[in-house]
Image (cartoon, rainbow, N blue to C red; front, side, top):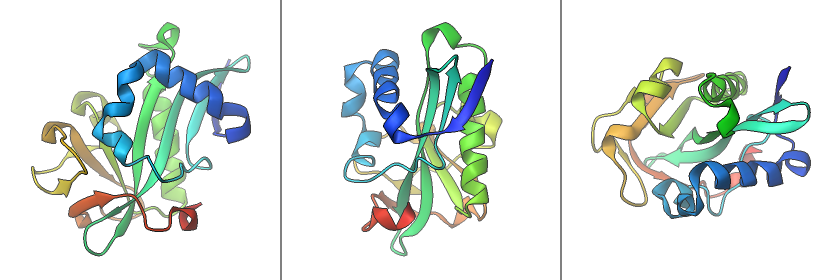
Length: 170
């Protein structure tokens, strides 16, 4: 039986990082998306993990972002990782979908992800026009997507950055 639960950092953080390392390799820290995770805090109450017999087999973390001159809040989705022996079972979509549902219930207006449109499109993510969102480093514009949550993702425009005060979002 697989359980989907909110992340409990004291119980899951080390296993999540090990899963990310196994899934993405050491190069994942060099990606632009990591610039948006440095210097901020994840949102464990919204993030989701999948456990089987107590073993962490999948994870989706959410992070606070602020977008544009108005510094509109949004959640940044990812990384999403699934243990190799559980891939192909839609578990990544399941943990991500449950994390997005939690963010909607917590009144986050929108979600931003850098990912595969064919995969995350199943969860309602849509590509944005080039230049709509400006990341702190190079990014393939075909992989930048947004989704409405409790508000409108179409309100997001401009620089995507780490919140000035990430603790206010916890």
